[in-house]
Image (cartoon, rainbow, N blue to C red; front, top):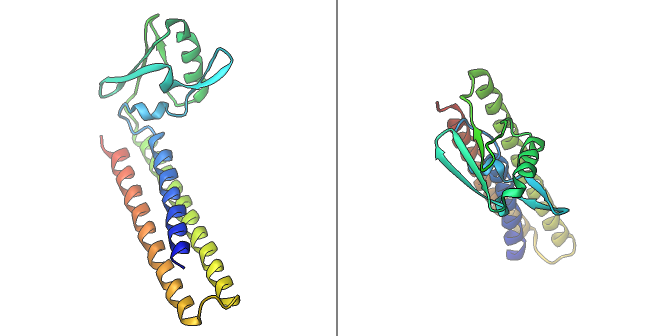
Length: 184
């Protein structure tokens, strides 16, 4: 039964990691190099993550500078950033690409907060699905007479406690991201 709890925790941890990766791609008004994590550049016929082709720095709070290691890839990188649709137009000066992050409007901030909440709810649903699967596994163990009814009840309570812990972490992540988006 301990194996079941470990597997459950592992799967719920993956839900948290996924939510964290989702949140990294949301622009909160500040320049964050992680918004470029999903940018893939076609490099000699091979899709290559931008982070493997260039140095990405943030010299100012609202500016990202992408400096490719191979200057000949500048146009390809600019094209990939446009295709990734991160909501910022790259400015190519022949040596580096600059991404200026505009001040977010109040309306845009509110829509981002809704998106943050929606993604948080999706993560909670994923965690609850993991709990449901684990509960089914417990019922199967009981049906196969591998555990007693008391063990099943204790197991269900422990699964609920684990689920509550992860739901609480998701709520905290949602709150932190909403605060970040709403801060000016």
